[in-house]
Image (tube, helix red, strand yellow):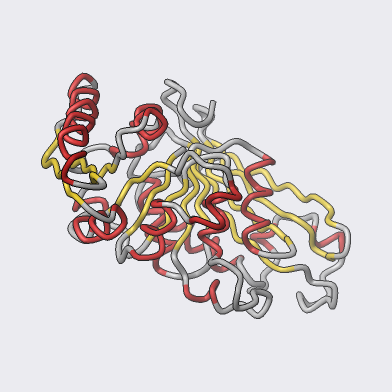
Length: 313
């Protein structure tokens, strides 16, 4: 089951776009362990003009790995699959199943290859069609539940012609609408550890507690942080951080460092977070309208950080 369960098997959706950050995302997902399912997904735009070379429906229904054409996304998915193979996340003798789903207005539709181990573990390559990238990613979460979505912070996505200048970045759209935690990967390398940030609210602490497996990432070092609005609130902030520290200790998770700062949360979090692989923040417990007009700490951190950011909910 997805998101916040005590099950030992998790499902990861890794969005592949051919950039190094997206491949690092695949590497990162594999590092969680060899028993978890991973879906590598490339979202391509609708192809009403048959720019795919005019492949007919018969060919589209075949295994996309045998098309012999470098259609957009296939070579990226192949590379992601090879990375997982090299990391030992999948084996060469797994059962292979190809699936095609018709999509009105596109000659090729949705296509996927499932590689299935004897123990039921799956590696999935998904070539998905959608009107735009964020919609395609969110639609994929409606096809199957996931525990974590990983997207690369790709400038290519920001420069797509289908995105007007006022549109938020693709990653921000996915974070805002995804039903599960989202990791936006920038130069992702788990070795420098995770910085878990809390505002002390029950919402934030609960989001961190129910996603402990995701936010601690195996043997990566864990540090924690909170920011008080003013000096008068510093004592309460320290108490809130201690509560998080105790929760992690109870789960046999060692806390390397603890930080209490006073002032603007996003500024302090991004400053300290430069020393870590991933900054973990909880989605602000506010309505979408409030987040749109007033913003949120998680959105500010996502925009300002130079390292990877995971938003949990």
